[in-house]
Figure 1: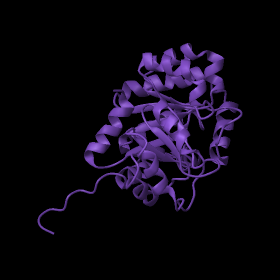
Figure 2 (figure 1 turned 90 degrees about the horizontal axis):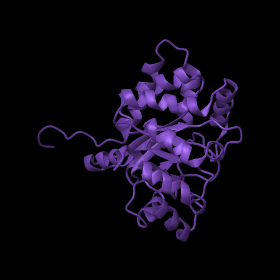
Figure 3 (figure 1 turned 90 degrees about the vertical axis):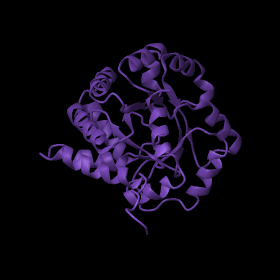
Length: 274
């Protein structure tokens, strides 16, 4: 059982949901990314999805696209992300780390080499949205040998038959894409989100986490009532971009993240009779 599975188990046993945060590596700088992760860990984050910037992003909305473009323009390299992950791992031994990005950088480096470097840096899983399970046989095998999870996505348009296949292939957790389209904060959740997630959960006993469009504690609390995890990305990337140079940057990120962590945690028991 790796740190991803441990995180979901801890939250499930406590009666809450796992809080997962996505941020783009190297935006606006690697130092800002590292300080933001420290703040998220201090706020009680369960899993960090560390985005690998790519020139042709898949499913990224304008906020994350702009962050990726800026990180690449600043000279970010994939090996720098591994080095960042290793530093984070030394400071936060229990924090689950997932690398999230396109398959192309993995292919360019070679699957075995990428897995070896990821595992050596203390990464716990990979999420490659443009790599379907059928094309990931060798990668899944290499990841399994290294103790890494390979996480796949289920979309609102996924058929039950394919959702079952994805659920069987995915390890760590299953990422449910809550909306049709690209990432980005939205003011309302889809009306059919709960019944759709519950149908997916009937196909598997693996954790199901909901992402795309989630940005507020109110939304996170609502999703925690039927999902095992909540993923917030674009709103965090926006916050980092706006305040990375502020003297209270880490405090801002920690305060913002703690509100989300609290929203998906079980409410403390009242003292005395009610």
